[in-house]
Length: 413
Image 1: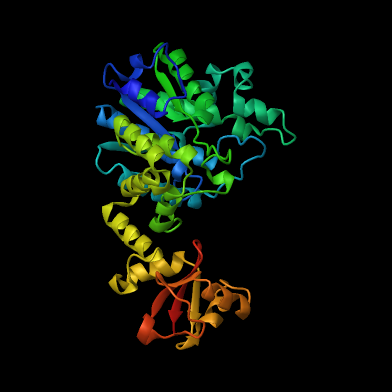
Image 2: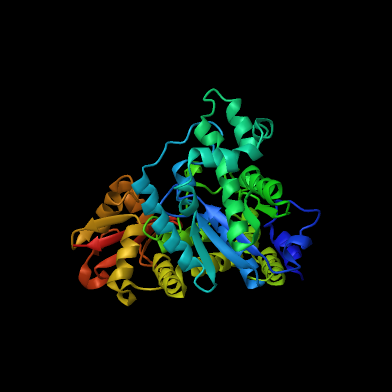
């Protein structure tokens, strides 16, 4: 299968600036670039779609340039309904360093060139910008771009600062074409207007055709929300912001509606293998094999095999398949961070601990839960309403579980 067909079948392709995609990526090996503005100190799961697409292109022999917008990050592309807050230069510079390190780790198995558009935009004078770039655009075409048109119709209006953003990004493409023979830019579908502005600038200044490709924004089919910082559901690639355990759990808990799309986009599992997993899931949906495969594969790509093994061990503790005694202190710390947690005195009554942990609303209810077999201690059911929790018998850490989903980590102190 050629690359254009595979990328299309995996769901990577939204728009492209040629009669057919094959002309762009199935023929000569090209230099491809993608830009990300450092609006935060970490990339998030939504960015991974483009990053995975870059890996597919690199695996196919194309050269990759990763641009981090140290200059454009101080401006920001127009939001749909509000003016962006300008970030301090020191903050932007710090974000550039952190995202570059993240991307270097993500692409550690590929030769990727990193550039910062501050290199060519910082010392460009206003007169030079207007003469060399501004004269190649008309107001008529700029106001038709979706992001600008939307803002012009809003109550907030649009400042000249954000209005000029497509020209800045267009100049990035021109600069990379001139210096590095870059002929393809890829980005999210919301960047189509900005990317095309670069295609047009190169054509007008150099009478040469270069290309644009966008990927669709990832949308959760069950909620209608996209992956993104503005949606309040960010899953960060930085393990200090989203721990490997939380990252793994996010993918483990995706819905059946989304999981097969995500297997195609966020992993390198072959399309044939995805079909096999889909068939197995139809036969035994309760096993959630697709979600487990997805969580393991994506977490390995972002955090590495060692972190995945640690996460899976911790998961087994959560579900009573592994005891705390087998965990390292670091792993126990991860469990404490990610589980409902309740400290308890040695020899405390089980009914009291159930109430203190919120697993029961009263002692009477706690006794009822115990008597009906709804309470487990580290995977073992108990019906003893007089039971005391002791470190000697139960260990320093134990999982108290009521029913199928309610649980708390208990630390005997």
